[in-house]
Image (tube, rainbow, N blue to C red; front, side, top):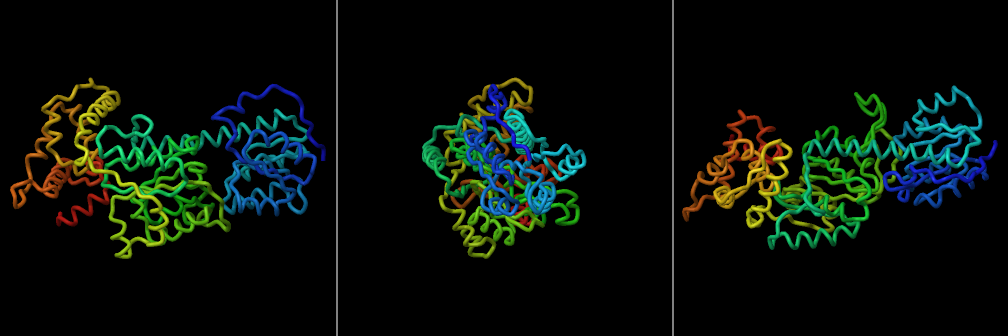
Length: 462
């Protein structure tokens, strides 16, 4: 086997693409000491971790202990070819990018390698810039693949941030939240964010991520209540080809896309009990097992969870595992409802006007005292999300009838005040009537999940 010889060359511009390789890790599998030494010397100053092994058996051990962003794999190995081993790890659920290197220009081997999932194919001997180019292409493709995945999810959820922490307003209720977010961003601890629907739990989670040392990697949100119980495991952990009916190919899960970053589990209390057991194991062992896979995969992901439910009550009723609750609730952050920070409504309304006017392509109107008066007199069961939806309707329709209708109707309590429950019920039923009973659309307008809406309707006998 011919060893490659490093040559002097100008630094490749792609090395700095997407923030460089400083957080990347590479595993080199080659039985030739000279090649292992050459590749390690070439890469050790560029990447956070570079490991070298001489056999697939040793590689299997390291893959069970650490996550590697890339594997550089020699095809001519003792006992088993690199292509055969690549096919095996793909069947086991490992999706690491692989650059196959070989001393023989064999078209059949190249085709087999690409079919097995190799990202690139290099012929020995090669120059330093050739291997760096191949690695750069792999990292760029992996980054773009994850970036596209995250952007599609964010377009679906319509999450918008204002400033670094995303929190708008200067009320006393927000100050301890801001301080807590800054402190929690500096530690890797699991956080449980509680609060009513629409209070900004995801925004707080994003702020922790953006202010942390994981901000160079992705923030991946998932609404546990919106994913069907039968596919939630595959959604989080991925699956291998043939794992279940319809699994025509292997697929990475959300933990894969959050590698090195943060996974946000919204409505975590909606997870099925069987999934709660598996999530607890992942949190404790830092490894996932794709559906149908025979081995576990190490992951480096910070988990932040959120719920609008009373989790302690769910634990007492047996709907949520106590051990998982303790594991998630290392630190708890409670988001205040909008009615407890009503002084922030003008700032929020003006921000939403600027944001939505641009999105809708309409003129940005300045909220007047009549609008602010109507907003201040409302109890906001849907919180900040409901306020955003109302401002959108106001910009489109040009009136505040929705607000005044919601604040001027309801059932009085014993002392003559309109109860929060009555106002909430009146407003929800009004929106349901407007959309012809379509709970999905009603939930979108109200800023609450369909499951929450169905639960309330069941309580009211609707």
